[in-house]
Length: 78
Image (cartoon, rainbow, N blue to C red; front, side, top):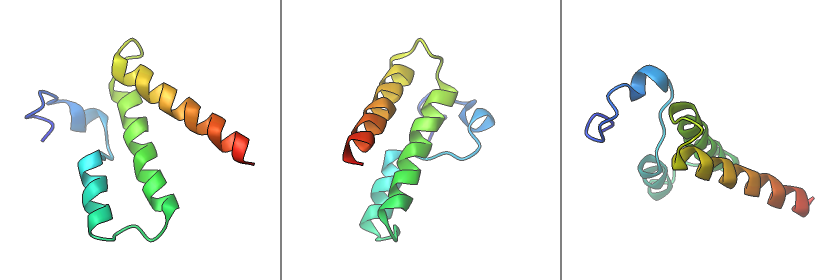
């Protein structure tokens, strides 16, 4: 899949790939036992995006923003 997306080095850099298509499939198949498992996969997607993409790309910046918003909202719920 990542070669099709012109990312031939993706698996050399990212050792534990995860994508939203896989998350969707796992949801559809009922493979998540709890919310924490789903959250871990989404955070893995974010971590991979920040590791693979340089900090000056929109992908890196968007993930950083999503993680900051999550941290902010989680702090407000406590």
